[in-house]
Length: 96
Image 1 (tube, rainbow, N blue to C red):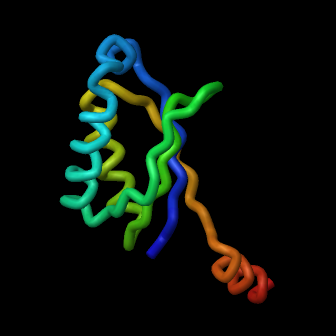
Image 2: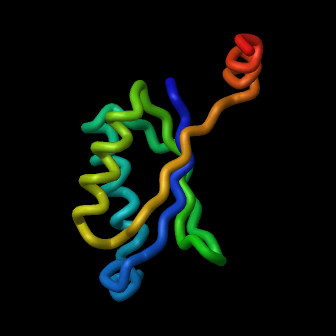
């Protein structure tokens, strides 16, 4: 499984409905499972980003589709980072 870190910020619509953020997170977990994506963690944060998530998925495409769907709802804008574990990066650099 591939790992991803998602950095997200609330849109004006998302912050206006901040009281529903935990409920939306639950719905997002359910939506993610329909795309074959597992949400490992969701953190609400202070600073540049409002939410940080870690995900696991079998493909980049499934994460991209999930985040396009989530983005189309209008509550968040996100930036996605593909993450590599220590063993994955060791395997990659051994090919250099």
